[in-house]
Structures are given as C-alpha cells and as structure tokens.
Length: 276
Image 1 (cartoon, rainbow, N blue to C red):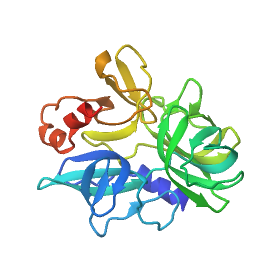
Image 2: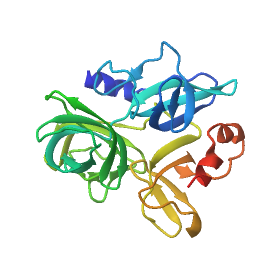
Image 3: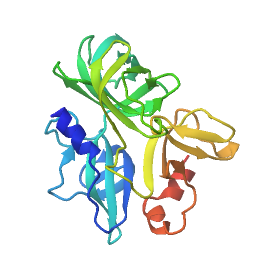
C-alpha cells in the first residue's frame, strides 16, 4: 500500500482549466471543513490520501494539504492529503516530550505513550521538535516516515538523521520532502522519497506553521515548510509563534501579486499578516 501511495503522490494532479491553489494547515472544524481558518467545500466522492493506508475519517487536529480552486467565490477541494510530520516508534518518554527517530515530539496533555509504541503524529515542526495536534497509536510493523524540509548541510529533517537519501539533481532546495524507510534510533534509512504536498504546481499557497528565529536581517521562515518571508523588525513574528501566511513560489507575500487579487482576498492574506 505504501508504494502505491507514493506512486500516487508522485503523479501530478489532473487539473482542469481553473487555476488551483494550495492550503496547508490544521483542521479546526469538520462540518463544514475549516483548515487554516478557511472554509472548504469537499465533494462527496473526493478521497483523502493517507500514507497510513487507513480509512480513518478526517478529525479535528489533523494536518492536511489541500489542492483547491475557486468556484463561485467558494474554495472547493480537488485533492486532500493527510500530513504526518513523523511516524515511527517511540524511543524515549520524558514528561510531555517523546523522542521518535531522533526528533522530539511535544505530547498533548491527554496522550499516553510508552517506549516502543508506534505513533503517527499530526502537527507542525518548531525547529527540531514537532508540536503535536493529534496523536494516533499504531500497531507495530510500519515503515518510519518524515515530512518536512531537509537540511542538506547537516543531513537532517527536524532532529532526525536521514540516511541513503538520493540527492536530487537540483538539490533539496526549499521543497517539502516525504521520506519513508527503516526507522533508526536517531533517524531513518530512506527507501521511498517524494517531494511537494499539492500534487503538482499551484498558484498562491496558504501555510500554517511555527515561525523561526530570524535567519537573516528582517527575514524569517516557517519551520518545516521551506517558506521564507521578510518584515520590518517591529513586524517580525515571535519565534515559535503559530502563524498563517500566504506565499507565492516559496516567498511570503503581504500584497496581492498582479492577477492574484481575488485569491489573495479569499485566503484573507492581509488579515493573517496583521493578526500577529
């Protein structure tokens, strides 16, 4: 099932003539579906792609990547992918923190996990740690899985060492990568790799995630996404804050690009920037 899912992920989404956009974020409401603050219509026959190969319905606290289009002023889902920053066995638990394949996981207050337990984590990266929004306990025998941006210098994704990962011709860049393979105590030995969350190119994207410390003068990133933005010192988001930002080609936009005024308004890009 996992190989079939990766083949599905690698195939570009079949798009009609309508411009399509990307949304990545937290499920805040189920009926109607609200992700990253946006209400989204979901056609009844649209399946949810899930790396776990399970028939679990979407739940509050899930993290989703959606390919959407505008139809009569409403966002309509054309592709839905469940996102797990990390799936693997717990190697250590210390209070509200667990360690999976070398990465720290902040546990919800109601979570009960023990060493050796396999879990699938929904949530967002914050540096080398995942802030969990939903935790699924799994039976053993799964492949380990990581989703996020790869640090090519350190050879890590989050706090996990990635081994045997084939280096793309153009490098890892700022793309989001999905890696599956054999879990190790400090990382993963990669067997399968795929890039991108939305099934192919999209126009404007809306991202939720935790803000980084400044990575350069008046420059910050959204952890785990490769998305980078600039702001005056007084408007820089607090490091670690959960933020929502619109981006074009991996760069945060605070004003509508030419020809993108309608989707900029629909995604409430200006309001999200000012909300901090």
